[in-house]
Length: 208
Image (cartoon, rainbow, N blue to C red; front, side, top):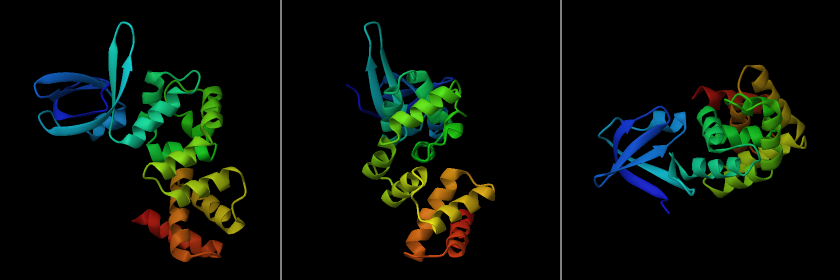
């Protein structure tokens, strides 16, 4: 079972890359975001790998981080989501944005992915809701952001915090961006901060 490849980029295809490892070229299927983050042919690269073994083939799926690979696994656990669609979701949403969308039950954000309709987006949100915070805190994520996302999704977040996030969303920021900015503002402002202060610190964070 291959878990990681470290070599040089040989060439690219529409949804794959060939990684040359010691003279052996491995065809690795990737999301568009992962492909865009990889270097030019001839340069060194490292990919986390998920290996799929079938009776008639072995396919390698590559990811820029272990977090992205874990989300690929989670997405594939949802009925109706195959490997191609999982890559499509990860090509549309970064892992942090996907985590936020699921924690906040933002079906519309997930439905932006190719081939994902409202019904399937709802199923992804429902089946993975309890796993999004755990993934965020367990694999290098931000535990405070995960808790905030969960509280907002369950509508139990303190009113100043919920109002601050809502204000940033009304200003045109994505829900995931607003949540992350207010989570950082909460750490800077301390407990009991008022809405206006959270908004001011959140905007400062977003402008950096």
